[in-house]
Image (tube, rainbow over all chains, first blue to last red; front, top):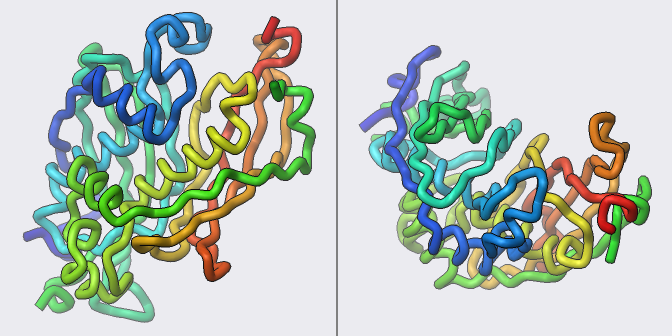
Length: 150
Length: 150
């Protein structure tokens, strides 16, 4: 299991691939983001900025989360996150897109208050099957040290 | 229907309230963020940082999206968003929490490339039923002008 000690600066971790499923996209949009261009091909096509049905940006973030969970977080001492520095939705995610990505450890330090807790800055990017970057983000990961996980 | 012209700087818009449902929290976590503290009361309780089952942060963002959609976006010329400047998950969201919130127009301008498209910076915050702020975020909203919506 990866602990703080393993998240060395510069480490690159491949994420688990994820395919954006049309029915899942529409179900997510119905539940959380029922804007027409996330629900319906015709409305998506009529939106000049996207030109087709596209995934809610929050759905793409949720796909990213699953890709990170399966790529490394579930086999780590992750304690969650206090927040995200930014998310850039660079390009639309369309039905059938196969997303791949990488997480990078940008920096890390120990908590001053709790020395068994590490604080790592993680950069992630997701690409589609054509090599187009669809999402970029940086966020803070809280992760226990080996000592803290005992 | 609200267009760019209606999103005046300083405008405050109440969001539609949302109650965090336990089953929905666990279903979301199973699908997208299966870290133990999002799935299970015992594991949530064992996490010193949260102390109970808590919603995935991306689930809270998705709840925010629904609250904004119903609060104002579905009755607007929203064209989606290119990204988020930050998200701060200030406090855990627990089963049964009733979230309320406000969106504020922080600034706005017209696109230089496309003068019928407006670009607004929106600040949002969500509170629980005890008045504790659970989420803060700022993001960019793209919204058509009256002319652009014709």
